[in-house]
Image 1 (cartoon, helix red, strand yellow):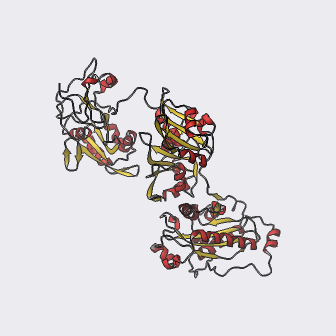
Image 2: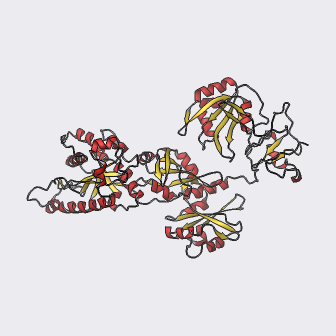
Image 3: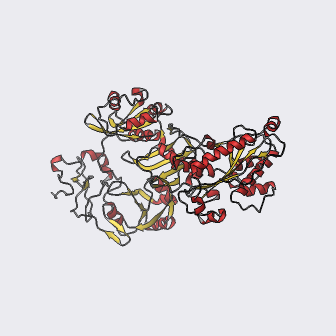
Length: 640
């Protein structure tokens, strides 16, 4: 490292004595810091996940108005390829970066040189000052996390020069839109236009801006530092909470084993609200690779959106905007039992899945063993139950620290009774989701196939009085579809929204809508085709009731036309179960009336079950005795 020529104090001055006798109040020493990466610059700094290649800094003593030596240091980047913008602005080459020191060595030298300069200017605790938030929040903290480096405490608090400027000049443009050049221009400062050393002009100009600001009223200047949270704090969320939609994002593509701490590490440098990571679960109660994250303010959320397609390990993570209602729906809860369980702070939560239904607190504590005690003993366990009190086989346990939780995770797939038990890291939001799901489940047992509340049969016809929605987000609900259609939703027939599921019973991204007329269907398609729903555009095309019926009953509808369902059966009132087992529906008192013109085929519906709407309430009593059911998978009953 070869620092440029220094700017020493005036001859004969004693910085220590001058600062001690100076009556003017002010902050302690400031370290003006500038940095650059091998990729994007300016407001997009750090958005492309490239490594830091340059640090330039200089110490300023606000009370004595003295400055220290200006230092410049190159940083070796793992990927030495420079973007055209960076190469043109910096004049650096891959060869010069290859000879530079790695980041950990540069940070050590930074601390040593800053401490020396501060001591020469009077000593005392110092604070970093940067132009905006990107350098620390989007570059240094994420890169240190990726490289498993521990940053000094100095890098967890800093002053944002743009905000300090805006405090004294509120009539200027918003703080996030300011730059070093615009601040100097607004103050009427003369800058050295001949300075072509990359980063040096920026630091010198920032120092001039700071000294000029200190000449004015400085009561509120440099009084409130920006803070980077060192640790993510867990905590509960209530459904009564109001969450600002401008503070929430959705992360998609997470590894299924990711914990809230892994998500917080992905967003290292940004301040996540307490209990602000909610891992989403699928219909089976397992993690689906998505999470909702709530930040402390909208500026942190905007920085989080710049991490779209950054990597967690070898996977890239998509980051989108989300709403406060979505966060509360996932993370919120109303149970007092859950609130008491989650009221203990700084606890690590583990989820136990697959417990014997007869297992109690003593059994679980014995399974975990004395080497990993649960916080509070039996009070640190929360068993998940159905609304009628039946156990589900799930439970949550609290541990006082990561070491105890890690010891408990070693019991993963250990045997309790005759069953192996799965253990996973969990979160407060996951506790709420699991409890909410079971609390809202029906008391009566349900069939394996979901009921589709529409009249049967669907009348065949060639009139194109339906529309098909293709490309829906997998998380789309009927309410989302109605909101997407807008005014056209008023023209939907009763029970006319039909979601299409795939062979695994999951949303396929398609839906059919029955409209009141072909004209209304055409108008809806023209108005809504390729509108955006949750960051995705949706195709809306007219179709006939016959085409809709074929797809809902197992056929396919491509751009080349209809494909028949996978098998043909004589018409009877069949209803399939999950594994394509067929059984006959027979009402005990009022059997369904056969349609006047039965459909041509009956076939496996894969998770779709059609019955006459008026017989839904008698569904549980309308199955034939077991001897009449088929015994082989995939084979229909012979007609009787």
